[in-house]
Length: 260
Figure 1 (cartoon, rainbow, N blue to C red):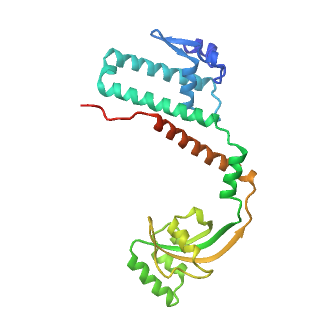
Figure 2 (tube, rainbow, N blue to C red):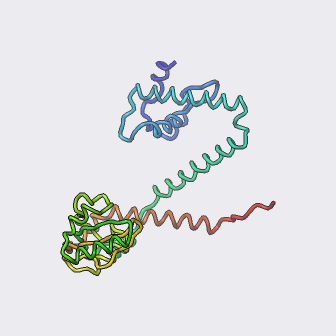
Figure 3 (cartoon, rainbow, N blue to C red):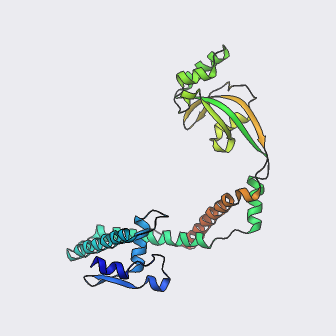
C-alpha cells in the first residue's frame, strides 16, 4: 500500500487549492486529502525541512493510524460522551480562532503614515544607553546594610559577588550596556536620576526584589533610520490591529449569562 501511495501522493506538499482537495487514499472508506497531509506536515515537520519520501511515508502512516483510532473511538461511542464532545468543540473553536487571526495578520498592510507616526514616537530621537552594575537582594534591610558598606568605601563589584542573588552576581553585577526600555520601570526611573559613578542611596524595589545600582557610564546614540526598524514597527502595528479587531468583535457581540 505504502509504495503505491508514494507514487501518487506528495508530489509537492505545497499544492494548489484545487489539488489540495484531491483524495489520495481512503481508510475504511474515509477519504484522506492532500490538504489533510499538508496540515499534518505543518505539525510534524520543522520549517525548512524538505519532506523526502521517507518523511512522506511517516506522515501517511501516522495520519492513517490517527484515523483508525478515531474510527475506533466513534465505534465505542466515545464521541458522544459530554466531556469528549466538549473537547472536540473547544478544539474546533481554537482552530478557527487561530485561523481568523492568521488571516487578519496576512491581510494587514500598515500605511506609510502609520509607520511614520510610530517611528516618530518610538525611534526618531537619539537613544540613551547606560552601563551599570546591580546587586539583587531579597530583603530591604540587607540592601540598606550594604549601602552603609558602600558609604564606608566597600567595592561594589565585590559586594555583588558576595551577596547578589541575581544571575550577574558572579560577574560583579555587571549588566553591560542597555537602554532604559529593556528594564522594569522602577529600575529605569532610578537610573534616570543618577550621575555617572554614583550608586543608589536608597534600595530600589522591583518585582524581582531589592536592587542597589551603580551607574558606571551613559552614552547617547543616534536614532535608528526608519528602514532599520520598519519590521519591528510593522509588527507593533499588526499587534495593535489584532487588538482593535478583537475589540470590534466584542463590541458587536451579545455575551450574556444563560438563564437557569
